[in-house]
View (cartoon, rainbow, N blue to C red):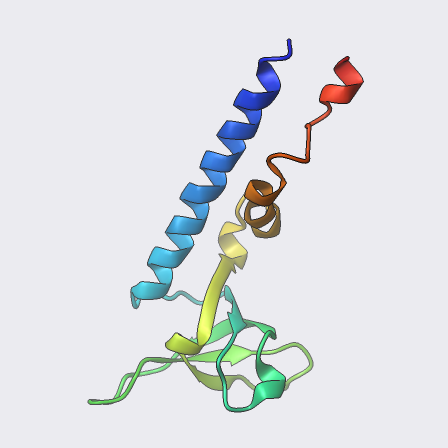
Length: 122
């Protein structure tokens, strides 16, 4: 029926908002885990901004210092020490979200243009 497509779209939009809100909450906590996949940003070494890496070390926090994680980038032999404020959580390799993060991120932008197969049902 034609009423199923809007409901399906609404359900996916709600799912994406919940998932992205959970990701944002993780960035505000110090609940980082090994195997978290992160995107680097706002670094002085600009060539690293936008790179994706995996958390391989939870580094001890010195008094007065900001939290840092060891992040291994593809092609590198050892992890870099990166402040948690300079990374966005994408997903954990052991807990890969379904549907994938990128799909959830783009679904709300598609809501008017994408019909989820409605034209095939017409």
